[in-house]
Length: 383
DNA sequence: GATACGTGGAA
DNA sequence: TTTCCAAGTAT
Image (spheres, rainbow, N blue to C red):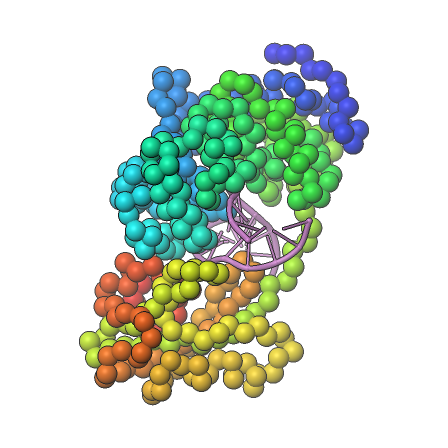
């Protein structure tokens, strides 16, 4: 093992006695840990396979990395298997329609990822002969691929020693060096330390090892420092409260918005759907007709909220039957929708939507909030 | 640099 | 129940 060298950290913190820049020992300790404790994941080539010469498929790495943006491993697994089954390579995805991809993505969230995924597949197929660029810069030109994803694909699929910095790495590195700068201002500092830690050999395994460590040992709450292969190198552990890192500003309160949703049933029991605009929240996804969603705080009177949630915005005049309310939490607001149902005898209520048999609703590009609204009026639809 | 952008699971 | 947050990107 390399002898530890002493070097002052930028803020002269205790890191001078710990994992220092240019020291390859932490990376090697982490890689040894990863060889024993790595997670088995559908998109992952194991260290043993990798050593035997199995090359990760850039398409599968890209697909998994996009799905994993702000999304849990458990949520991604089924979607990854569905996508690779439907579209086994980038050309197959390029041959699909955007609506096909949105239907496949429905329920996973952050739907601009699905639209960018399709755009990216089209560009790789048409401008790169079906091969992903083998460089951070080339990858970053593609839609939906930013700082993190370009580095992750470069490291994992192409063995390029790029600094892969995701939320896990931010947590691990901010603890290793006890970085007291608040997030997100600390990002550049964290990137610099990550570059210094990243080894020239096995950079992809190193990146995945850092993420596995963050996900299973160096967790946000109650980290298992006793099991950590880097506990000798951790300034935050030496200080005594590793949970304090990374330092984050308090979150803002989430406002509440109100509105109404309208379930229109044809004589055959089909449900009327329409497509959302191609910009903004849930862009391009399907929906049942619904009102504007109006913000209201706790000072707003019940009478005013009642006006926000009545049948005035309904797309047609009808005998609307109240069907309960649903609450849905988005990232930046909470939505409370009053749901109404009606049966119509004449087919189209104008607009440019379409009718769907209740048994086929699962195949539509319906975001979860819309599934909740439909379920309020039609229980068991999505059971 | 701040904000928009989904969802479901854990504590 | 409420809060946090999970392999971020685009604007």
